[in-house]
Amino acid sequence: MKSLLKVGFTQKVIILLETKNLTKSFGGLVAVSDVDFHVGEGEIVGLVGPNGAGKSTLLNLISGVYKPDSGSITFDGNDITKMPPFKVCKLGITKTFQLIHSFPEMTALENVMVGALFGDKDNGNMKSAETKAIELLEFIGFPKDKTHLPVKNLNLMELKYIQLARALSTNPKLILLDEVTTGLNPKESLQAIELIKKMRDNGTSVLMVEHIMRIIMGVSDRIVVLDYGKKIADGTPEEIANNETVIESYLGEKYIF
Ligand SMILES: Nc1ncnc2c1ncn2[C@@H]1O[C@H](COP(=O)(O)OP(=O)(O)OP(=O)(O)O)[C@@H](O)[C@H]1O
Ligand SMILES: [Mg+2]
Image (cartoon, rainbow, N blue to C red; front, side, top):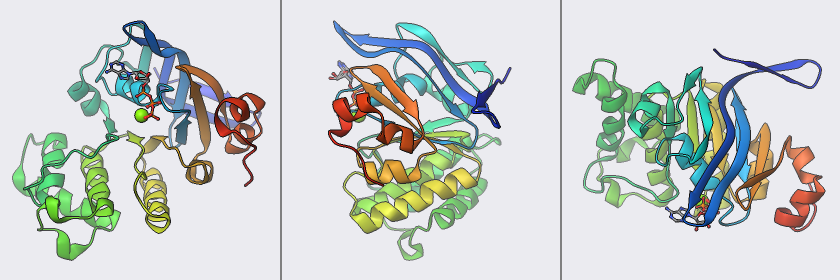
């Protein structure tokens, strides 16, 4: 069952992803502590917080890479708390990693085809995977003349494009992005943001971890702040920018739009 959440007096959001009391420890360290939060359909939610706050761990719990010690995760009406990553992916969640993983000797097209083959309902039809990969590379604006180059010859921005296209190739309802703009110059970061908005407009909700405030404040509908594994704030960019706890533990000073 999907649930509706009332936001303010007028707006209603259909909840796509919801965690309740989610907790994960590594040894004695509680990396994610009792976290309740949600992502609505069609939302871009930013996840921020200091280094080691638990952001990547939270994404890894959602995508099934880690199993929580306690708490629950519901996605699109399904309990995915204990599901392995490939099942979570089949249900419609895909994730990019903080470090780029690709197949260096394979071409850009082949790298995207790998994801398309996995997401293919006909179970691995090469021709339809190729057609889909070409469509996706076009959708994200990947340079056409580099489609058949081995990815080891691509620059960082192009590698990120490949990573995003590969993530989209499984037809996700929700994409989890872990620091996609890291290492990009300001112009490239803006391009990446436009692409993220385009993905959302195309029907994929987004949960993104990002350190650069200008980016996260500009692109997010809502921002969730973690500190020492705990959620300390959840609100619109403006609410987060004015939240005293967030200013004290993360922003350092008031963010000016
Ligand atoms: N596999 C692991 N084994 C042991 N400790 C871990 C593991 N993964 C994360 N941690 C610890 O859990 C805490 C949260 O780490 P996490 O990577 O989730 O933080 P983060 O918010 O993503 O940080 P950053 O901004 O630096 O990427 C840190 O103290 C980290 O050292
Ligand atoms: Mg991280």
